[in-house]
Image (tube, rainbow, N blue to C red; front, side, top):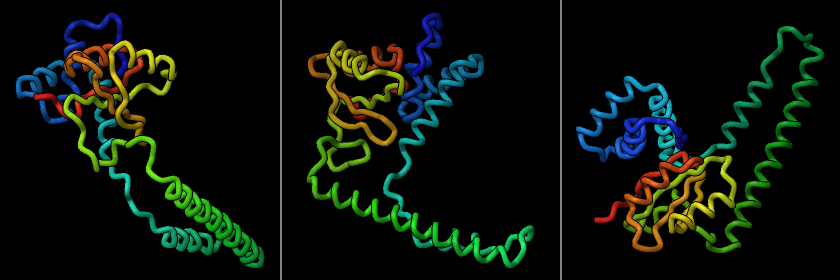
Amino acid sequence: MTFLRHSGGDCVRAWDTMPWVLQNSATQEQGEWLEDHLAHCESCRTEFAQQSRLRHAMSLPTDISIDANAGLRRLLGRLDMPDAQEAPYRSRPRHGFSRALVAVVLVQALSIGVLGVKLWSASGSPLYRTLSQESVPAAPGTIRVVPDATMTLADWNALLHALRLQVVGGPNDMGAYTVAPTNATSTAQALQQLRATRGIRLAEPVAVSP
């Protein structure tokens, strides 16, 4: 999230409300207030649109199957199409060479992919659990955090230490971590501090404590 030092109180309130609206857990009054504020604040509209795109990308499935053979057939079919600007006697040799080159590259790519899967399987269980793995439910009070790509590891560790937070999951493909308070710090207090920190693009509750 981009935090502006000179933003008004309404903008801070809008940033605090955005994650709840995006999760459809905000009250009707909060949603109407945010909609009215966005109609008059361009910077908050830009931030809300960015958070909406980020949340949508995080919700996309990660186990989409890819038919490599179908893609290869389509690619080879396009290479076989005649080129009207080239003479017939030059077209065939070039297309034959292109088909052979593409086939070699794809075979190598598939071999590397298979080798990677075997190595990953042989390594046993992963050292951490990503957000896309739902085998273990999130504990109450955990928070999903997306730091900016420019944030250094030292700054990230310093932030976790200052807020008494520990990483319990992630990062996933979108760079999101799951963190949890290590002491009596409430989730609401940690969320407020995270959203007010420069370099934090998104902070939202995963499971709210009763």
